[in-house]
Length: 225
Image: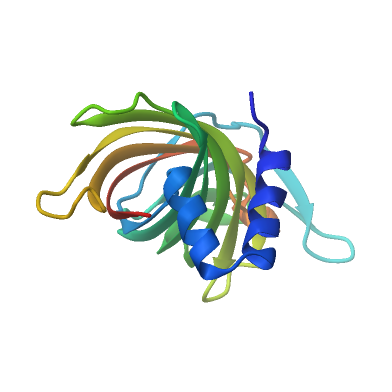
């Protein structure tokens, strides 16, 4: 079984030390492909924390927050991936994803009657890697990817500071070659699941301590070297 920490340095060394012709031949022999596509984003909370928090608001004053919950607005996004197959039935994948949506919060403050709300416009940058397992030489090539990485949550209008969260990744789907392209171009349809702790942007008022999964249907065009 190959390992990411041994495969990735080998790819970098090849790119630095080889000619374009050598790189192209190696890419073709090892099933290298690049994909670009769009995703959706539908987040579901997995856990909630019903506890009450007390925090300091002044030298001799405190406030209490309770009833916190968090959700996001659904949005389209961008996804690009690089695949490399050192063995015929499996490979590795590197992903970069971009999305923009709003993180929304509901909470109760002891000092203020009624439920308070906050909305934080957020841009996310996903950097993940995964092992890819698939059969070969069939018209519709199914695959399953398992891996992880991190997501950077960047508030674009108030709400705190940017924050990285570790993430687990599971992908499943299929791809098929487009006709009249000598199998160079393909279409990939997949479902993605990202598991991570919801961001709070280092702001106590926005901390729900919840874990969630982002379900991301995705469609991409693939170029096979």
